[in-house]
Image 1: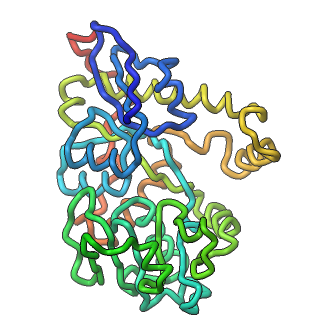
Image 2 (image 1 turned 90 degrees about the vertical axis):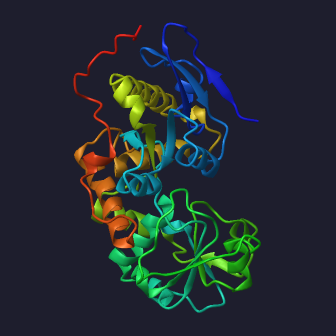
Image 3 (image 1 turned 90 degrees about the horizontal axis):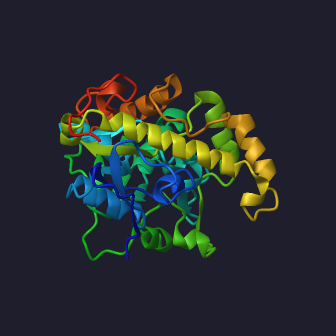
Length: 337
């Protein structure tokens, strides 16, 4: 059952927001923060795949947390969406490339000529992993065969130089194929079940993945953006004040969350305070910053570059083309309370 929260007021514009349940969204979900002029209904108990399909394919929500990779493809195809520069989810990707331990894969270059399984080709986690493997380790996307399990959230025609096989609907998952040795590696947004089960047939490409991720950040200053906050073009056209109202609310919610998280008693972890301090020392005081700052432009622009190299967009559009302005003075809607 979906968890729905409403901030009721008949004088405000009713909007539905779909997003994950995170500390940085908790104040919005619980109604502690209320976007100005908006009666917000928050749908917060839904897995990421379902949420993105319902938004991108069915347009069920006014505003929705969605995959950056799929948003890039949609905009590149002239789709009906724009986005707020609100990035609820970021994650380093080196620890989410898994291998079959019996295939002799010791280094990234050993993936050349191999079969790599993915849930979908353009999910953001895979787009980052693919780009990082090529740019940092010399494994080109054309050097492997991509085995894709599910339909894409945004359909696209793969370029001819890409070796891409789509599994039939009744096929086992790519995680199962990895354990059985039918694919050599898997890139995944999350930890896969065989690894959690300590299946000896499955391991990580980078066993010391944190060291790799620290080196990657030191070199690139990129903490990979996974999700953007998508919204429909017609909403912005009809109510041009809405993006700024939502953006301010997301920022306020994040500020409350970060202040709460600074308290070492908030999590039942023995070395939580040390981890919190390490994050600040390495990534700075606000690793989840919103807005099109120089750092975020560099970050998102790299993902756009990877999408172009993947052949899923015809040209690497400017970063601004993927977002709606949120900091300018906006035209007031006459119906606004």
